[in-house]
Amino acid sequence: MSNGGPESQTILVVGGGIAGITATVEVAETGYDVILLEKGPSLGGRVARFNRYFPKLCHPTCGLEINFQRIKKNSQIKVMTMSSVSAVSGGPGNFAVTVETTPRFVNAKCTACGDCAAATDMEVPNPFNYGLDKIKAAYLPHEHAYPMRYIIAPEAVAGGEGEKIKAACKYGAIDLDEKTETHDINVGAIIWATGWKPYDASKLTSYIYDQSPDIINNVEMERLAAHDGPTGGKILRPSNGEPAKKVAMVQCAGSRDLNHLAYCSRICCLGSLKHAAYLREQYADAQVDIYYIDLRAHDKLEAFLTKVRADDKVNFIKSKPGHIDIGEDGRPILCGEHTIERGIYAEPYDLIVLATGMEPSAAAEFQPPAELTQDDYGFIVPEAGSADGMFSAGVASGPLDVSMSVQSATAAALKAIQAVRGQGA
Image (tube, rainbow, N blue to C red; front, side, top):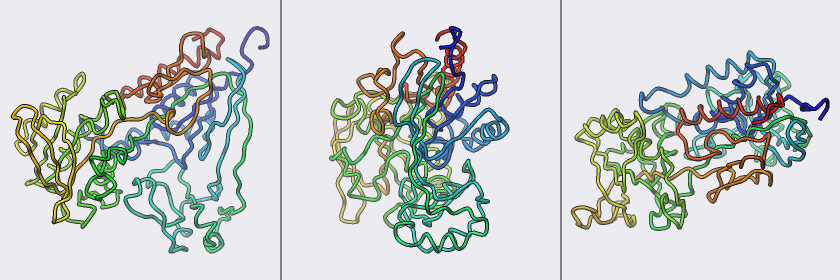
């Protein structure tokens, strides 16, 4: 370090979800340069895929758009999509970071006109909707994407559709020669906001998630209810497109289970309460049965639970379902034993929603630097003195809801600023 201070005062934020976005704007608006890396084609993370927030059930686009405007207007922020960290060396004030950027095949000349999508009939699974539908092989990640730029699926380039797509672009925005690139950057501090992924429900073999389209997980339920989802916001049975009017929510699907996720993810109960509200809003005659071990609604969100409980079409059933069968009519049948009444049930439903927990991406999708400590579950928890200059934010640090993730990111931003100022964390 020169003159006893850090060599770089640039702060790197890894992950472009709500925590990464928050940390980025908080750092930049205090006057420091920020590089924001996002491995996907646009910012927003899981929050961008939500239909609504609890408890007010407002759309997340509002909060995200405000932050996108803050990013657009701040010259001290550099956003790099399709990018991830492949290596880190050095220490506080002088981290050398190797960044890998994968091809998007569309450059900054893109105006999002859509001519490229119109030029191809090839379709690929829609990643924004968790593969519940398909999308053209040249696509905008979603209607509020930032950056507002198309992406060409690698399958289209490999399958020979690329030239047709390129010929349709009037702006010279298609670059089929893009290759995976690596380059090095120097930063003074790093905020890991790498987020989470839903626990893989196919591992819950007794719930036969991968054997019926009418057995879905909680994030897929969000997309079914969303206006830009696979069904245009109508909550329908994926198997036949009929309205889902009798729905079961299975809490702790794989959570608090030593064979899967040993911990509670904090927000799953509240998510299912929100899903019950979606259904009751759409269908006056809908019945929602919530099967639970314990109901957890932290802090002021207890009022949201009380509100949903007051609906006589929403039933709370204390039970841990044992397994799911498929009936002769194709409907999934939830089977188990009532915890209190002790009676056996085998109840058919139009749709069963598995409330799976939050698995840290740090455990599932990338390997953090050795200097960062991970707990038994893969969450990043830097120990004092072992990783000065590197901090975790949002769900990378543990299960949090959106508001808690924002608070965590603000705290991480302050620590990173203190680190590059040479004051320590």
